[in-house]
Image (cartoon, rainbow, N blue to C red; front, side, top):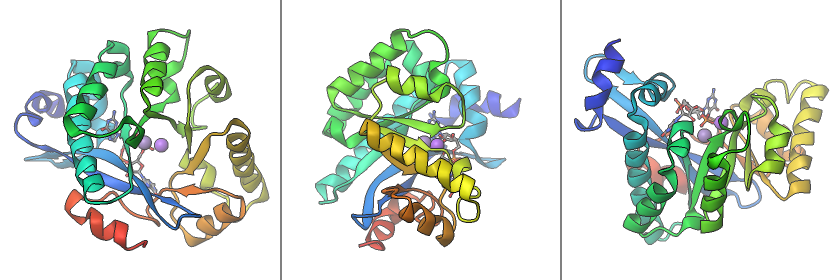
Length: 253
Ligand code: G
Ligand code: G
Ligand code: MN
Ligand code: NA
């Protein structure tokens, strides 16, 4: 396809960029962190979603350089914000293939060192689909990153299967509850009970739960009532260009 053909040059031609979406603390009433999300501005096709090109990069062996670029850009950006006095954490989505390649640990260490960013500021977002099957070297590398001080989050929690088993197996600090859970939360007692149980699961395991995909004030109110402490979604803030990020963060203070 055209996208697959053009992807190898996208990085060198400067067609990739990052946007950042805020994560808000309910008790803190402020933006606690931002998640980096990659975009490709294709010269002819316009903006391409990572949903389309990340799988292509994974098939073409381009994912490791792409993820290195994301890590370098995002850690440098966050280090600048921290130096400017902002107390923020950075979330970066990690690819299965990068973890399995064995180079994620040195790549993360290098990005943190170049940026001068403490590992505690970096949250690595992994999806559970990564860990289907036997424990392998990816488990060990994730543990190493956790031991280095990086925060590990399980992204899209609840979308796949065997989720509970992963919680026993992996060093998870944060659960990002899939937005599917929020679909009926404001109207329907069963949906609310399900979300409540995920929040309680987090409390029992000392894992912070972030609700993803908060779009309406009704969902926000329901999540607050259920004791959810961390929120992300279009209602709180859309993915934003770095230049506009300070204004988005200040809007909460
Ligand atoms: O930002 P958006 O909703 O378009 O993201 C679509 C999907 O792409 C999500 O699953 C998100 O996790 C993933 N994604 C966004 N940025 C990155 C990235 O830098 N690396 C990887 N591997 N996935 C990303
Ligand atoms: O898989 P992951 O959670 O990393 O996916 C992040 C994606 O979710 C991004 O592409 C982002 O644009 C999208 N997203 C963020 N907030 C919302 C929201 O409130 N509603 C919907 N539908 N998508 C969202
Ligand atoms: Mn994510
Ligand atoms: Na997610």
